[in-house]
Amino acid sequence: MCERVESCNRRAPGWRSLKRSFGLVIPLFLLTAGAPPIEDDLAEKEDQIKAAFIYSFSKFVVWPEKKFPDEKAPIVLGMVGHDYYNMFEMLNWAANKKGFIQGRPLKVVRMEYRSSKKNGREDFLEQLRNCHLVYMGNLSKKKQLDIFEIVENHCVLTIGNNEFTSFGGMVALVRRGDHIAFSISIPTVEKECMVISPKVLRNAEIIGK
Image (tube, rainbow, N blue to C red; front, side, top):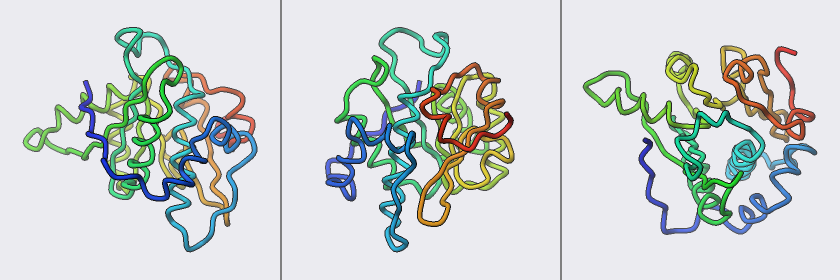
């Protein structure tokens, strides 16, 4: 099973606006009405919006029952890469503050890419396959393709940035001008026996259908 990363004792960056982003209404609003504009000099705001999207995906994706070992098992969100630290803090804060999702706790796990047995490859494989969602930050295409192969047939929703869906990813978060948009590769998601709510799909750029 994935190891839980200890919660950060200090407040996440931008915590006041973060509370609004992870409110009962805003995550759904982001998915059904589009993200609000972001200011060019505020990378933190972009991180907040991306984190809110990811949090919302955990609410509006249905996994096969076989993906959960028991009825109390958490929804596990894994984060791997080099540019997601603020997002991790935000999502970990939300997981601790917002309670259950789909009747289950949300568990946010930070992982480091491992390429060989000598540096913990086997544990990395197990961590990835136990996840329900995996966000890939600033990783090379080669490493992302490796992760796709690792989680194949394990019902893991893969999330990344920019052209992520063009080479096998499921959900891509893309900055378009002053907004964050997202695209979804429906065939890739359906192949892994997951279902995404129409509330999400109606405002996504759909790939493959």
